[in-house]
Length: 161
Image (cartoon, rainbow, N blue to C red; front, top):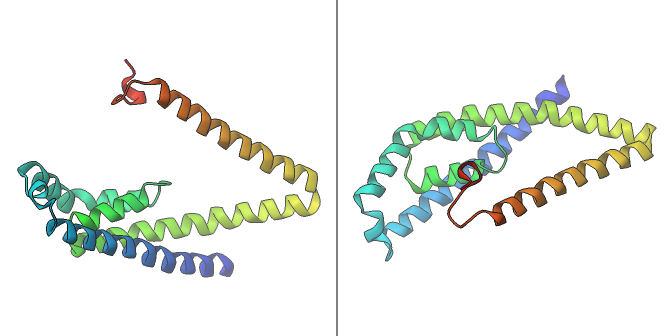
């Protein structure tokens, strides 16, 4: 249990620094864009409406983004670039980061332990399991790319013509 607590604590510090840093980079990028040639586009009524919505309702999205793969960086960057107030962002960061750290500390350590035992006791089975997993991931990626390429521009998989 001590191993999980130490790992979760280390992962929590890492996620706070990484996500907070991404938020800060987004904040600075947004500030720079507001001073650039894009300032006119950013000043539009539609953009301001989106910015207010993110500032008000974006905290739950940021918190839940830590439970996803690949969306977390975008959510933190957008929260920063659209100037989500720190009073809303920080609680979402602390809660979402804690959930992420606990999930990765428990499931991640468990998976590593299982793989370690598998490779130590039955190397051929371990190598086969990793090969099957890699082939499955490659198959999913190829399938999704081919399916996306077959759709007309501007359509998503959900709204197939």
